[in-house]
Length: 197
Image 1 (cartoon, rainbow, N blue to C red):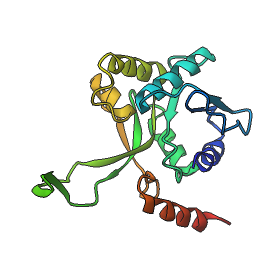
Image 2: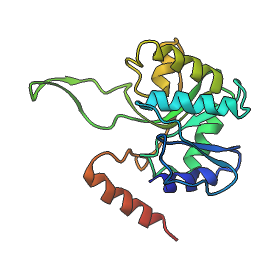
Image 3: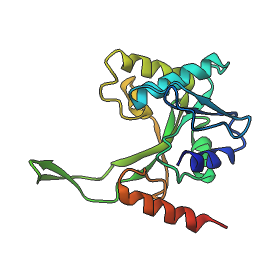
Image 4: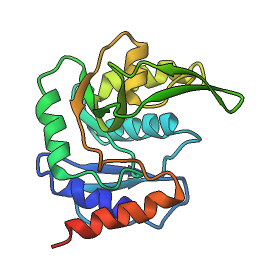
C-alpha cells in the first residue's frame, strides 16, 4: 500500500520531498528516488509519528513556514490529481486544509447495539488525507496535544482545530478511501486494476 501511495506522490513534481515515517528498526522500505526519505521515527500513535516526522523535516532543513502534506498510507488510492487539487486550494489559505467528502449516508447514534437516534448529516464531512498545513503550525499544534497524550486528536486537522483554526474542506474522492476492513483489500485491488493502462 505504501508503494502505491509513493507512486502517486512522486508524480506530483512540485513536492520537494516525501518522508515516510516507519517504526524504529523497520527496514522493509527503501527510498526509491532522491526525493523520498525513510525516517525510522514512528511513534505509538499516528499523531506522535507525524510529530516525529515533522521534527525530522525541521532537522533536515525544512522551515516552519513550509507547507507539509500528511498522508495516511492506508489511503493507497489517492491520485496525483487529488493531491494537486488540495495544494491548489490551500496554497494561499491562511490555515490549510484537507481532502474530505460530504457524508452521503444516514448516520445513526448507537447505544448497546441499537439505534439511539438518527443524526442530521447536513454539514458533516468524512475527513481524508492528505491534509496540508504549515509545518511549524502543525508541529506546534501536535506538541500541545502531546502534553495531554494527544487526547481527541484523530488527524492533523483536529490538532489544528484545537488551536482554534478552521481548516479548509477540499472535495476529495470516494475512491480515496481508507483500507481498513478485510473486504477493503479486494475493493482497492479492483480500483488499482481499473486504473492500469
